[in-house]
Structures are given as C-alpha cells and as structure tokens.
Image 1 (cartoon, one colour):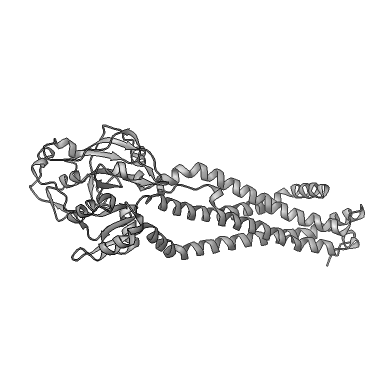
Image 2 (tube, rainbow, N blue to C red):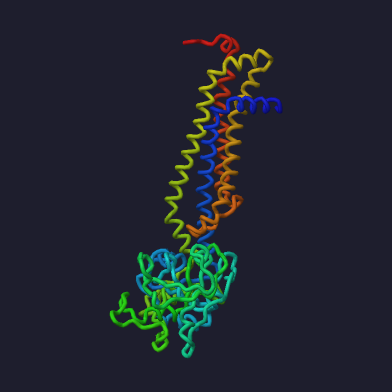
Length: 431
C-alpha cells in the first residue's frame, strides 16, 4: 500500500500542470463551503455576545427584531421613544437589577452616539458576562445641578472609534445631528465634547459607539426644535446649565432582573401598561426570529456553495477520464511489469483521492490563515468577531463530505482503467 501511495503521488506530481487548476478549484470550493459557515457562526456569536446580561429590552411598540436591531446593533431607527418617566419607574422596580437607558439619534463621523448614564460602564455585560474595561481614562460624570458645564460635555469612545479616528483622552470632538445624514460641518460644533475615556475592545457594537451622558444629549439640543436648530436662538455651551436638562425620553432600556424566572411575567406587565404602548422583548427570542428571517438566504448560499463543490469534484473526475485515454500505454507498461488490474485500479483511485484531500487540507489552511489575518479588519468593518474553525461543526462536516464525495467519484476513472486490456494499451485504437 505504501508503494502504491508513493507511485500515485509521483504520478500526480508528474502531471502537476494539468492538476494545478483542479487543485485550485478544490481549494476554492473548500474555502467557500467553510467560509459561509464561518460567517454564519461568527454573526450569531457576535450578536449573542452583544446582549449578554440583558433579560429584557424595553422600547416603544414595534416589532421585536426592529427593537433589537436599533437598540443593540444601531441598525435602523426608532419611530417613537420611551417616556423618561417609564424609565424611572423601571429603575425603581425592586425586581430590576439594572436598568440601562439608551438614547440614540446623533452621530460622530459615521459612528453612533449613545446617550446613557455613568452606571452603564459598570453594569453593561457582553460576551461571557464580562464587564466593560477602560484602556484609557475614565467614565463620564453624571450631571447634577450645580456642577460646571464642562461635566455635560464629556465623552467615552469605543475602541474602534478611537482607533480609526486616532483619538485619545483630552481630544475635542463635535457631534452631528441624525444617524444617516452626511454633513460637511458638524451640527453641534458650538458644543464640543472632551474625550475622557477609551474602552477596551469588546467585539460588539460598543466598539463603534461614542458614549455621552443623557444630560449632555439634552444640552446640545436646547436650541433645537422639531429636529432643526431654532434660528437666532444659539445658546453657548457655558449657559446650557441654566436650562432644564432632564431627559424627556429614551430610545430603549436594557433590563437585567434579580430573578430571571419572572421575566415572562414582567414582559406581560410592561406590554399591557395602559397608555404606555411599550414593547418588551427577550433578546434570545428576538435573535432566533432574526435567524429564521435570514435563514432562507443562508440556505441559498449553502446550496450555491454545494453546487460549486459538486462541479469541482465532477471536473476532477472528468479530467481524470480524459487523461486516461492518453495514459493507456502507461497503464499497459505497468501491467507488463507485473502490476495487476487491482493495482491499476488502486493507482487511479488514489490519485483522485490525493488531489481531493490535499486540496481540502490546503483550503482549510488558507481559510484559517486568512481568517486570522482578516479578523481585525472584519471586526472593524462589520463588527464581527470571527470564531475559530473548531466551532464550525456543520462547515467541517460539509467539507469532509465534499472530500469523501470527490474521492468516491475517483472510482469512475479507476474502474475504467481496470477494464482496459493490456493489448489496448500496447496497440491503441486510432478510430
């Protein structure tokens, strides 16, 4: 068997030019099969990591998926907000362990601005229930009457914001009104914020967010009405403390409960409150709904990848059959030197299997190295933290099935060589 394997490998190497493209085809098919599963599993892991420690997300009445996307992942916008009085009611509920307000609507050079309270940096959990950590500086201060105006204009940057825009503690930044509006000048340039902290990377949307206080968000809008600045009513930053900076509403509230067994009861209570029109969703259930929604796209991509893999395996078999006609004399020489039909059969089968398994192994290696090299870029551009290949159970099974299928197809040229007679190789037909 060892001799046969050595002979098959040398025979394949002698025809490396013709087999190289086939090998590249197998590598591409492997990367495609495994890459789709890698993207799918990484997306699920990143989405799940972003909502660890949150039992309920409370927002204005809307669909669960929409509330999840705009409150946690900054995708889309809320049509209505939650009255601040409702947030205070939740904050004081004895069943609530943590109530983290989220106020959205502004941006900074394409990154979302999140208005919240300083307790957010102590109670927000991600991943395996990990707390946020500071790479530089500190959290912003909660404003109260009597504090200087500078306290209002403190900002904490996510790791990706600081990295891409090259910001550090002490820098001044000017925010823009709106999440999707492209502006040449910042809308709130008259009220700049000072960076007081930079968070360590989390692999969640926190990395791509600018955090300010709820009072700070109110302060930059004191001279605005109905989403536009009031003409002739520009109020300097040092005078905003003379106004009532109590928030009127928040976009959503992330709730953590003391007893998770009561989550369904609390959900029913919140959604049935009169005159409140609230939605209270379980993040895990909303994520499941989201995956069901995009499941059709996943299946289509997997189907296309499977077709590419089948075509690649069939292409290898076709080439082996075509070249078999040119190798009849080679097979005949082997037979004449004592190699039996079974040896010829094994040689052709091993050649096909060798190309398949080497291609698959190289494909897995290329994807592993490529994933490691591109992981920082993927996280920066898409907010996805790539999972390890060992977590791709379905993808690895698909790749192994692909290799096994291609190897089995190698039986076709092997059986054809088995049937060829010695005299057919020594005296090939010309017609």
